Image (cartoon, rainbow, N blue to C red; front, side, top):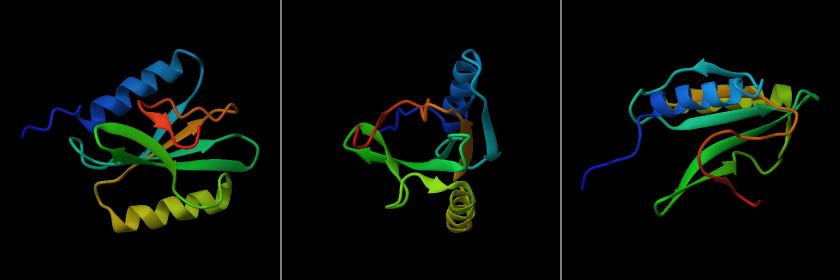
Length: 113
């Protein structure tokens, strides 16, 4: 069975442009595998706290789930958790979004919302 999901780099670039059109910066902290890398989002609320969301596939549906039990995290803890995840997965994309509203900007619903 062929995998017909979009390449990760195309998804990231599209979301950067979409958010930028509304004045929300998205920064690629680390590029992972261009075709199939998983994305870890740090949503910086600009108040000293951040949400860390990871991709979870439930069947054919993409869901964004908090990486840790504590959500949001103090920003320094979020940065540390991102570095730790990157040390486990060389294909991982690390993305930071600066959005006071806490929007994730990427396709898929957010778990628990």
